[in-house]
Length: 96
Image (cartoon, rainbow, N blue to C red; front, side, top):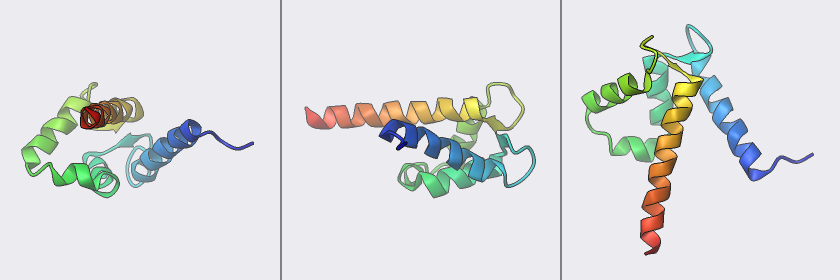
């Protein structure tokens, strides 16, 4: 059975998270370095707008809702959701 576009997108998000989270330490969480690599490799256009290292650090801290200095899948999905909503709003305004 063929996956729908949405199912494929969900599977891709999970696969991308795992590709980076499995590099070192807890394979179910992204260390700061793994998250940084993921953002630079997978969201290069977004990262081109983040010039400030402190802004990236504060983003990591705000994602880390349980304070363990790592980003679990739920925290990662919160971030992906926020970025996707921002992109959607941007493109909605483009149509006006």
